[in-house]
Image 1 (tube, rainbow, N blue to C red):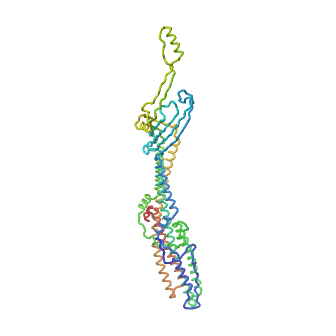
Image 2 (cartoon, helix red, strand yellow):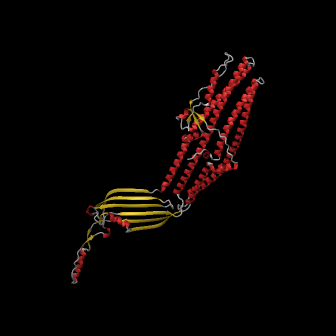
Length: 571
């Protein structure tokens, strides 16, 4: 957790110490004034009083919470999840309902049209229908279910049912037998959406690893910059003390006045190093803040960050072959290439299927029903020609036969069958009892003259698969080279740290020895200043070696793909 600290950053300690030195006077001579300069007491855009200690774990946690690139990667994963749901929704049934009232007036010029003397009749319908359609996830088939019912009223004189209640139910299913039987466009889209989701998750993890590595590098850079500033400040203090000592000895006549110039030159050189170190602290801190803070409105943007995690000195001892195997197993770049290859394999399967002929089995079942109120229709028809009847009777009289007594007109009354008489529910009963069924089974064949699109798409997919295979080989080679380089850097940094530590210890001993000899009059100021320079450089090399080792360890875990496990980051 981020906790406020009660101590000031090294630069403030140095500033206070230097300011204290500038106010001191030597007790040996009231006229002696030490020649000191004051350092800048501010850091641009940072409140040095408001300091926050920061562990490496805290920095990583803040980066994963606030970094906009991580947020964007999370959003991409969510988008991929939604795209998968969209692709899977193709199997959701589509339900359509239609209700309407219709009234129409129909002209009729036919004697049997039922229009009567007006030459027209009116019919009104109250209709309701529902349909369900969709695709089957098994076998690639499609189905269509329709149900409709209505109430019809008419003025047609020939209607035997008025009102009447026609209804119908139909179900059809189309089953691919060759193309689309095992793999179709819908399954292809779903499989690709799954791979894209896996790819987005891989890209998200890759981005997280990248951010963690950047934070680690920036964190150690800030730690080095602060320690270097402290070292440079201590060097200024030592140079100031040496200058004051030389001025006292010159006043006593022990040293030549030129020795004051040499000490002052040393002091100004070290002061320049402090300014450069202070600038490096600001740059390193701003770099870390841009990685771990959401925006410049964060309260930490104006605070001074103090890294408190110890430097990484535990060097992983992993043989090169084992490290390479881990990298080839864990590196997300290879997973991404493998996912891309799997997508191309899906495309290849689909386009090979598209080259097959389209042969579908089509089956349809329909059931209808009708009922209504009975309506009697009376018809009067002329069955014989009167003139013909008279002629026949005249001939019969000549032959002494009795005349025919036949009526020239006939009246008939039509009634609907009893099975059709009923109400709305009678019409539905016809459907459920399968009284009027219709069945149809057939095969539909589609043979394209040429399937150029599918052939071209298949060829392109095969070429892209080969391209990905070449990319995989190149990536594996690059990863192995990175592992070798990382191991070499790791071992070199470890060895350089040991050597730098030994050199710093030796430089300290030489500097202390040179000061004792100088106090005894056995050496010169030049040699003391030289030993002081050597000690400063040795300390800087040790600090740089420590930082390089920490960064090398971080980079090693990155190249073998173990950053998340090393930092215990889970999702």
